[in-house]
Length: 111
Image (cartoon, rainbow, N blue to C red; front, side, top):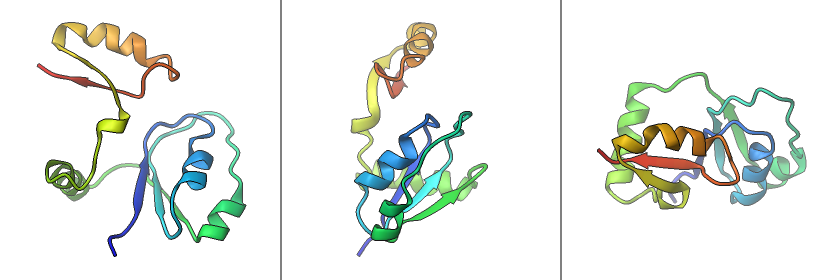
């Protein structure tokens, strides 16, 4: 069985709790997003599903390489988090759009 890992890189209140509710048992959640506000987590979901939560400060270059390999080989589907696509001329507007978390999650910049 492949290890189940979720990377939380959003950093908004409620995301960690939402991930804990949605992930399958035995998942490892790696929290890289920095939430600058108090956040609520319901420990029951972590206990009942034996979820491990790891907070990290930065990534190791090997983690980037492994993630890119997994995306390139189709092991990780990034389509669900890409909510928009712009060219280089649209980058400024994309940052404005990303200020509204209800509207966008990740915007892909395609040169």
